[in-house]
Amino acid sequence: MKEFISPANAMTSGNLACGLVAIILSAQGEFGWAAGVVGMGAALDALDGVVARQFPVDDDGFGSNLDSLADLATFGAAPAIMLYQSMLHELHIAGIAATLGFVLCGAWRLARFPLVEATRHFVGLPIPVAGVIAVVLAAWQPPSEFALTITFAVTVLMISALPFPTLFPNRRARHAHERELEEAGASSK
Picture 1 (cartoon, one colour):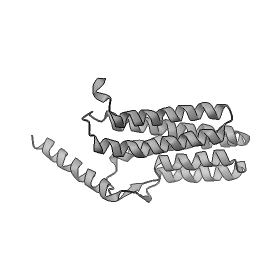
Picture 2 (cartoon, helix red, strand yellow; picture 1 turned 120 degrees about the vertical axis):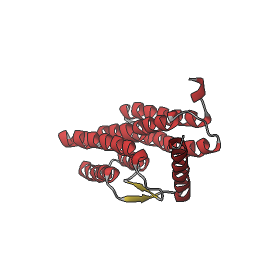
Picture 3 (cartoon, helix red, strand yellow; picture 1 turned 135 degrees about the vertical axis):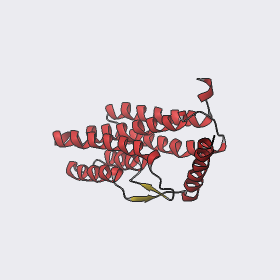
Picture 4 (cartoon, one colour; picture 1 turned 45 degrees about the horizontal axis):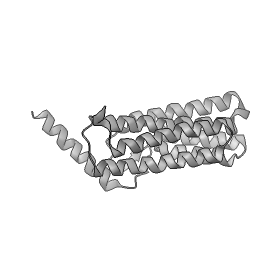
């Protein structure tokens, strides 16, 4: 396990911890604090990639797998629980369906991410963005029907094929090119 310890993986673990703390705070009805903790998770999620590029570690995909698991907890499960507990519970079955759909589609979005060839944009709404939208809704607590509509829209956008801009399109293109070169080198051996 020692080979997996790195600054980037520590930040990703912090992101995962933020998801768990947000769930606990949500269970206590502290939706504003829970939203703030998810915001901290988003900051850690943004920084872990930067740190990973600055201090590369050959961990055979451990870091990227950990990142997806952390994102599912912090931007999938925690926001869904927050939405349900803050207002969607009022809609009974529709609220359960919306929160379940949010988590499932977030997981599908994360599973699809490494398989998509797009380098200049994301395909589908990234789960961190969807999660932040969801926790803002949970903290704001608009009428349940409005929250249900927004939750449904964000859920569909995550699994859509719509392009969403990336903050660093050149970096995504460079990393895709580096991956292609690595794969070409591996196949020629």
